[in-house]
Length: 429
Image (tube, rainbow, N blue to C red; front, top):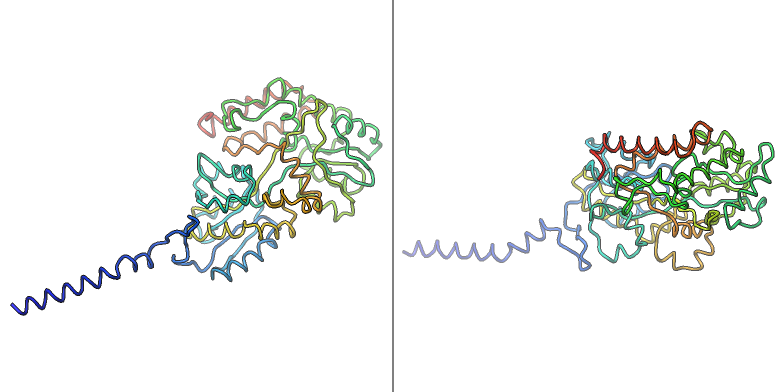
């Protein structure tokens, strides 16, 4: 009897000890928990030795400082590689299942839909304190089917860039630019140039005239507005710039961007339509550039350029998603975003900068991009957008080279777009 009482007493002691340490110890060892702001607490999870980050080509210099600070604070090394941002999806398809797969990638917002469909990127959940740093439109650009997939790092849209020595005052309308281009046309000297044979750059004209890509909230691929009456008028307007030789014949096709930039950097063009990625290149060529929003269309309507938002995304390739999100929040925060702007000229969509009048006044290019963005349209992020580019480019180029009339060219383009959507995406959504 005493023996059984001893055993029972020992069991009670053991159970008491386990009960005292069980839940708290388990929380320390296995649970990530939450911070007071509702964000996930990753401090107690197993830390990876490193995170692999895919950065935009020639932008690594802007990542180095943030990476060093992150490593110092969290003890995780950031190993980054640079890739052309337009090829991120192709690279993920090739390396997604290898040791070289990234934990974090940078992409433009129009890659969100296709990357979600292909399973490349993961949704993220961040606190309102984090989201409130950015403009509402830049955050919305990374939403897809009700989930948030990234945080913004830069916004961009084409603007009006001019040579201050050749143009003392910015015209209010494209009609004024048209007349100026007629006056300036002399041999290999031109007025205003734009690569409107590329639909990315031509979209502003189509939208300003009343055309549109997709219906609804730019997400209804069953409704394509690129061959409606207003789109035909837009292409007729573009056509006359080519027909009168105001745009040289070299500004069509694969070399159009190089040709336009070359003429502007040589002082042989008064002004161009281009994006913030070109600012430093023009300055390095010795051009004293001025930067402004695009002049309005003859109707008075604004040029509705495409707006792109670049961001940081967590991939589905690794088991380090909690720490990958921690880095995304870190690298996209206000301090690191401002540093990136100083080093690369990429304009961060930070609310604090928009509200800082002194900063806006001291950053002409950024201010122009922000002003133009008010009239800009975010590129559709649905996968069907991939079927728009080539047919529209072909339509504009055939018109620019006098091989087809606008209505005919756009009818053929939209027919091909619909066929490709049916074949590659199972029909319109």
